[in-house]
Length: 140
Ligand code: ZN
Image (tube, rainbow, N blue to C red; front, side, top):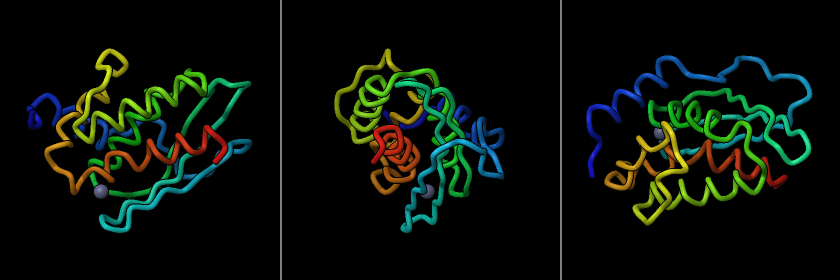
């Protein structure tokens, strides 16, 4: 399945009006930077963990529309989850964008990236913020 109009619209909405995007590093958060040199994407993820629950996630940085909208969507998808739920969701997102089977019900706006599998060159753009947040949550 290629991107349809609704998917494009969700991606562009998050690109133009990103959620949880900040300019200054927040205090008391751990952070991790993710780079995708082939496209120029450069995002830093900020995490506030409470016990094993993701209390808050923010991101900073620049990149293409896919990268920035994916980071915005990722924060919404991960906030409120436990570490093991983040791991499960990341695994399924990774499966989805690489064209493998995944659990559709896990996702809200992130489902709009299921068309990425037809554009392998953009895979890294879609997953860089997710991969960085996943490693951050796992303390890697
Ligand atoms: Zn990109």
